[in-house]
Length: 174
Ligand code: S3P
Image 1 (tube, rainbow, N blue to C red):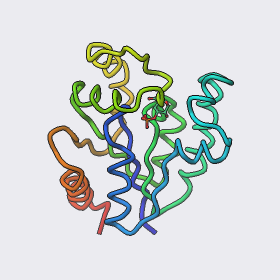
Image 2 (cartoon, helix red, strand yellow):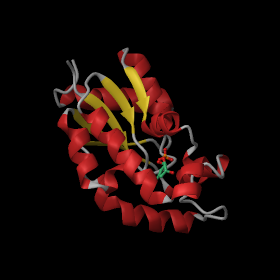
Image 3 (spheres, helix red, strand yellow):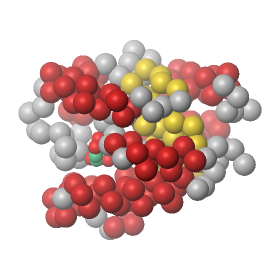
């Protein structure tokens, strides 16, 4: 039974896209935590935030992290704020390797601008400077990663290959 590969990182760094690709290449099941929470609650993430607030979302997220942490052989993509809670980090590290995806603020800006409205924590007129500020606040939390890979100026296949190479070098992947 292999350790889960858990993708963490800021919104718009490509966690879902890369997670899908990695799962495909490694023939593993892919789990996107936000989609699982939506399925379980029957509500979209923006609706959970709007109706019950961020606290409720974070508690659903913590339940999900606890549940997935005890599984194996998965590729998991987390939400950008999952690692804000130390308990989530411990749960996901229990049987997982944490891979942080990084990206340049301008690339994050371009990616999140394409999906306006789907991320309740980002205001509609967000700027690159706002993203830089937000990244600075989040950086101490992303530092819990076992591996960090930048997704800027690379295609999906290159990022997936780089992650797999890193995991192999460290003995976490055959
Ligand atoms: C969040 C990131 C989102 C989602 C929620 C909160 C965050 O996921 O979990 O809107 O706190 O950074 P993505 O990173 O997939 O956008």
